[in-house]
Image (cartoon, rainbow, N blue to C red; front, side):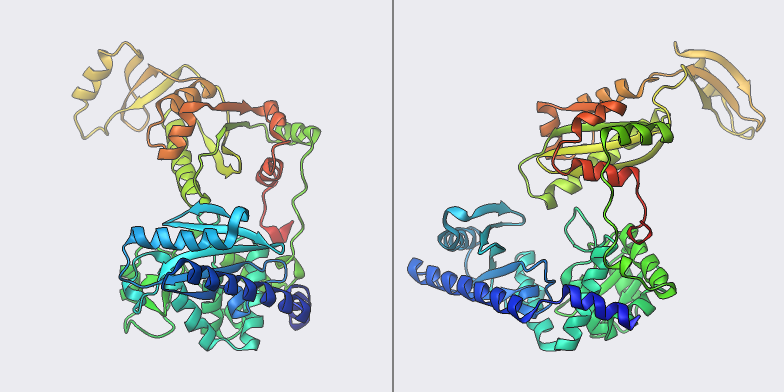
Length: 461
């Protein structure tokens, strides 16, 4: 295992030349930000936070996060106005304004991604006014604890999580954040030890680095139904692993088990998904014998952390309605770029015109059930008694065609995400089967569809 980890570090650890370049860029941005604050006559501080500030950045991913800290006495409106004024002054025309909990600016500078984020300079991270106010406290905590050797272990964990597809706390991914990776290494002391212990994790695992809670059952109650609980050292009322879904938690545990059994570079650098050609798509759809539908519409102008929860909410609404009408949904997924996609795969797209309504068991009166169905125009046969002793009717099925039902679902938009509903109301299209070939030239969609149709755990590719 040691030889594999050494090789991984050789590939992912920044060289001294890389470090000098990134530090030079970060220093220049910090200086520009300070000068902008002075020119505008504001009282604020700047702080470099995140992986670059802590020396835990992967060679291929040196994002620079600069926070602009204002006094707590400002109103939220004043913070946003002053913070964005500084950020715009620094970024100039190269800046792009984005909105999460509150606005911030992103830019490219010397080829690197830069985030300029206004926040409050809160003294107590347990009394923050917005989520980003914790970041300076995270920076101070990790920086004080992390040694160069531990930083290398963090790099290994980040690459491992990336390789198995669970790295990133954004709501698109629902995985392990960089900060969470740092906390796990600080707790276990090494990547190898973490893998050994994580292979035994079960949902509801609790890690409390500073032992805030004397009883581990307490954080389980506070952070109910969360598969992994890592009590944030700077705020015991926060779960630093809250973003991790049960699916990604389970993938991580399985990967740790498999890595211990058979260590390989494939966990860190899996084979890329082979992109499907139109002919390849035809072959795989024929082999699967299922019916694949893609609902396509223009993506709402919101950040991914707002869009993806709404896409998943809409996906659940679509899948639930299909299932209620008798269609077997094998799998579903969502994807977004300039367009948004809700994909559903059905066992069949056509159903018979008859479905069975099952009444109560023999020991419960069926009078109301029988009268209701006898008076229905949709009643085709019944009442009858099945082999289990229940009264049954055969009734006319309202929806026999999945495409027609999907169009009805999209027209009603019940339980859709707000921005998704608005986008769908403007225009949408449904592609089915071979019609999906028309979408293969959409940026990123070919990779999404190829991964969906050939899906397997990355280290098994």
